[in-house]
Image 1 (cartoon, rainbow over the protein chains, first blue to last red):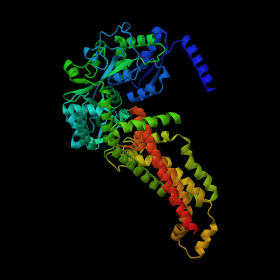
Image 2 (cartoon, chains in turn purple, brown):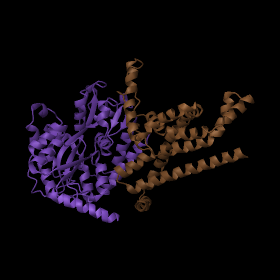
Image 3 (cartoon, each protein chain N blue to C red):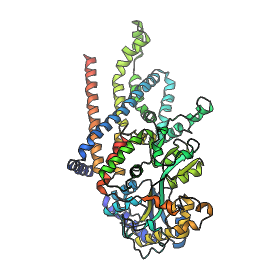
Image 4 (cartoon, each protein chain N blue to C red):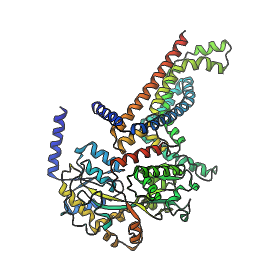
Length: 343
Length: 252
């Protein structure tokens, strides 16, 4: 009975889908503005249905837990691509459809996690830096990662609840790569993070913006676009790019296996990379985009913002967070739990 | 559902035996269990201390007020407990109602850090679970016989003696079931520590959520759930043993 009902439902669903293809997009909350999809619908006649996630892990768990979800486009971060490819969650992208890729920063393509960009193209990118509220802490006091360890900020700091970010910061301080896979180095990073724990007030990622806006927290690790969005509501909030290296992440576009309209989905990916559309992503949400021509078309006030229009040297300081493999990942996860339970 | 879970657990246990991680994790889980226990214990104790007087007041108040007071107690619980926790957020924030009022009255100069503390977790849990303490005690106390009070007073008992020698022993089984109704859920309400707590407010429920949602470690999550279930079972058995002994004592 149940099966036949399900069959009936699928039949209707399929019939409906055939009559009028819809693209199902699964994206980070507050990342790509709706206006972009409206324009896509206007130009192609294809409606776009958007749902949101708040972490790579949540997206991964959902796709893996139910492969029949049939999303057409997802936006995993750089360090998630290889893991998803290995789990057979991503479909090939036909490079011949991707015509707007020439503007992408050279640094961002042909990454080790997807050397030929068979499965993903980077659309947005961002920095992991430090957010500061200058009402409570003078901006001049926060210049480097080690300042988050300073004894003057006991029980005040926010850490991003994204295993890779705190570890990246610690690995940078130790002089290692953010993609380090050596268990000894990971353990050293853990020890350094543990030293910083007395400073940590809260470990959070999804409510970080409102915590800063409402001044429940005024110092912490932060992502550049989130901090930009928060500073729109509370002008005391500033994004500090620490001295030395910083973790750089790519918001990649990919097509999940099971997509009903992969060709159409690729058209959407290509559309998002177009200069004027990428520019809308910058102005709409404060996300930096990989198409470097997009920012040049914007007013000077945007071009002055370092996190969307970085100098060559600033860009060179960013280290792209890539895949670390399953084994190292288990070490990271183990030490993360160990940290969360340390009092 | 249960079959898939079973498969997962089997795979999980095998997995954990196979890898040397099992030993690494062991003390961690003991600490986690202890911390969950601490949170639940404080929550339960607070619920008893707050809930008992309320139940007593409810049971002894004039008949016509009872329905109104019971309604007032229950109305907030028509909405989802998650929504109520979000409501607490707006109360406890640095720019929230409590800090706003205190600042306005000039009692404090800087907002108090109320939110993202262990105390906030306890407040959230007590707020969510208090009715489960009040109601069983109230139901039992409500059936008290006013002749007991008269008899006790005739025999020269003071109000303190009246409470400790008549009401308290009489209501003890209800307190016991109230404790169970509060303690067991308090171990599992993962969203309260994750919304209100500080960096180390972590309970077993949070770790299960982390393992399943964030680490893609379903076998691990299933194994942790099993640990939680076992812990709850032990507490239930301990409670039953204590409760039955008490009752036997009273009868004998």
